[in-house]
Amino acid sequence: MEKTARLIIDGKTYELQVVEGSEGERAIDISSLRKETGLITLDPGYANTGCCKSSITFMDGEKGILRYRGIPVEQLAEKATFKETAYLLIHGKLPNTKELKRYSMLLNDHSLVHEDMKAFYTKFPRASHPMGILSAMVNALRSFYPELNNQTEEEEIMITMTRLMAKIRTMAAMSYKISRGHKVIYPRPDLSYCENFLNMMFDTPVMPYKINSLEVNALRVFWILHADHEQNCSTSSVRMVGSARVNLYAAISAGIAALWGPLHGGANQAVIEMLTMIHDSGGGYKKAIEKAKDKNDPFRLMGFGHRVYKTYDPRAKIMKKMCDGLLESLHISDPLLDIAKELENQARKDPYFIDHNLYPNVDFYAGIVLRAIGIPTNMFTVMFAIGRLPGWIAQWKESIYDPNWKISRPRQIYTGPVKRDYVAITERG
Image (cartoon, rainbow, N blue to C red; front, side, top):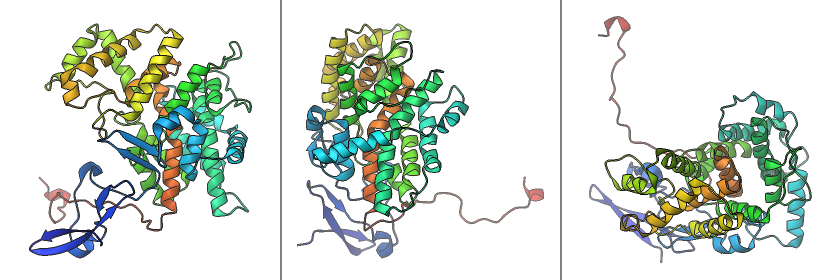
């Protein structure tokens, strides 16, 4: 029996279909609402609006659940490589040995960036944020790698997706090296995806980078935990821009720009900036907690709470464990990390934070982990973007093959002036 919801407007009843997902999520289908009633819904921030049906990621904020293609993120963080996770998200299943070997070869073959792109990097002002540069350069990839001849649409999409996965880490490391005036380090075929990135970031002719398995593993876990997160701001941006049938590079560039925001991907950078402010102020973590609890004080503790998770962020649990082990193993002495640990311990037992569900989120621990492995603060959001790329690609791919595809075109409620006549400039007061 088909389930419906009844909507009564001006005494007239309308039947709206209730749609149910595989995990029991329910939604009222309002796609014909305006046609039938002349009305639209108003939902600022889209907190109650579903934009699509998706088989990629399931999350339950009340229960603290996150799964990619049905597989708990905890299992992937413990057992999978980042490449396996990317393949799972993009292709819908974990790769077998043959598929993973071929995927690894393709990532290696496409990992170099066109040499002419170096000139573009050097023209950005030195103060440019790496996220702005990355968004622009990803969009520019279309010019360097135009449509492929003698390929089916599906083959072209496959190669384009692989190119992006392969090149984004090279481009990110390149932007860092050029910003410091250092020689660009090229990817090596003998290194894994994560090893290659760290080597391209930190290797120099005078001080060869030594692969540290703890740091590589921390980066692997970080990227897996950030690989997708359902319909967030940046993912929705990729889908919305992609709905205009732009090329993949342009859609991903839009996602990067959205992720840049301090309330989204920039939150991990904001955590370190907050810790720096607490340290430099000399007030200590206790004063910061007092300020955060004062509703008349605009100060906010970055890295605490989440818009969707009303319990502990499942990614934060994994990242906390990784963070604790990494700091202990590396024997790092850093006053900011000391403040972070004190802040975490105090907030986790303070009734105010518990009652308001202000648990440390993944951004809090991510910022600490990235700092511990030597990633510069202004590169934190870029690290997030590299990790989120498989999810963006998967969401874009799903949307372009969606049989119910429509170009995204939200409505609005107009609140401006009613019709009025133009007044000549000589007659205006």
